[in-house]
Amino acid sequence: MSTVDLAVCAEMVFTDLPIVERVRRIHDLGFAVEIWSFHDKDLDALAATGARFSSMTGYLHGDLYHPDGAAEVVRTAQAAVKAAAVLGVPRLVVHPGELVDGHAARPVHRATGPMWFAALRGLAALGDLGAEAGVTFCLENLNTVVDHPGVPLARAKDTLALVEAVDHPHVKMMLDLYHAQIGEGNLIELVRRAGAAIGEIQVADVPGRCEPGTGEINYRAVAAALRETQYRGTIGLEAFAAADSEAALEAFRAAFAG
Image (cartoon, rainbow, N blue to C red; front, side, top):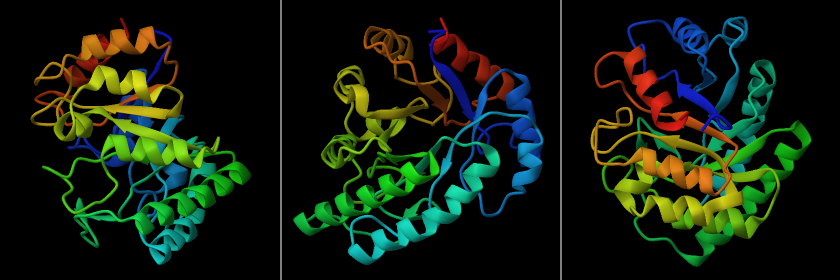
């Protein structure tokens, strides 16, 4: 799949190295780079590596399912936009609910109508901010079974419905297939259904959240489905290395670059 751009999350591989060195290694191996947080990093040092950055977290605080939380997401997203300008990051990732060390900051186990409307208004505001700054905000689906319990509106079907309902050119879906496999499965039909709503795709195998080939997901079949849909965007490895990081990156490349 040579027509897609492959990226690797620097937060999860080469973890024995400082973050700047991880970025440099990923870049030297021919991949774009994903990062998570931006506020605690030396952005100038990262930019000096010459790496291409595909995505990073697009807010600091807040959640999309309460009006006050959505306003905080939009407010703190302005800092992310400034950081993105330093690194040339085109896509900024937001979540339905704020995560603190991976856990929901304000756990909610049942979504309501007002939560949907709050999320729609918040995403529309993010889209307008993205249009001004020339970036796209991507709403990531999460699994609430293993990694992120207590985050409402987090299933892929929900995040896709929100992105399609807001219908803004600067709001897309960060389709995380690791989370989708745990929460919903049926990945090939999911990528076909999501189609033009996808801003970027993230992958890891299940269980273990390591590189393709270490678990139950047939990523070669997923890659074939993406070719059939003529997907031309970015696929990011957001996964730990089962053993050697460089070998994990090559397994990722083999799964999607054929």
